[in-house]
Amino acid sequence: MADSLLIGDRVLVGKSKQSGTVRFVGETQFQVGDWVGVELETYAGKNDGSVMGVKYFECEPAKGIFVRPNALTKVEPEPLAKDEAPELPSEAPPQRQAEAEPPADVTDSLPAFQERRRVVG
View 1 (spheres, helix red, strand yellow):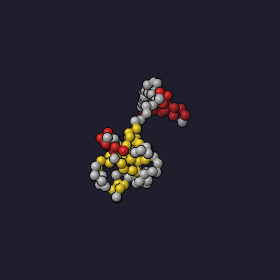
View 2: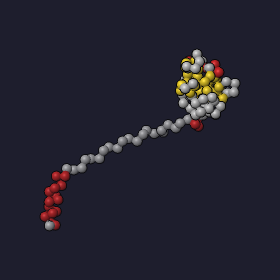
View 3: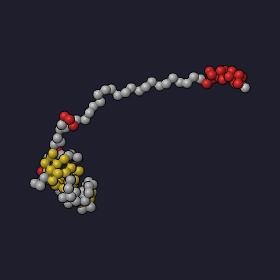
View 4: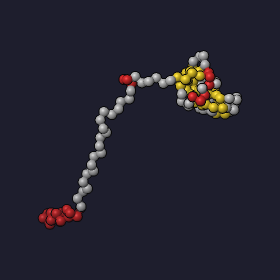
């Protein structure tokens, strides 16, 4: 079962069926064999993801526990109900507007400006 467990999997631990999330899968320095580190939802654990000074994962104190893979039951995610499905856009995203025409060259308006200046001044 250790091969089928992945970090982030939701599990139930032992006969008590404490729910938690897998945070570590593999060999440890504290005991031979495969172990699974689980972050429990409640403060029913034994550590913070560390054992004998070695940190295998991080969680709040008393929320971490290490168990053998056969002590776990994997919880399959429930499919979303039809009304909980994420909404998809009903129409295409707005198109980018065409850029405005560049302003007329300033020198094009210079003769008109000079003409007005002669009239006024």
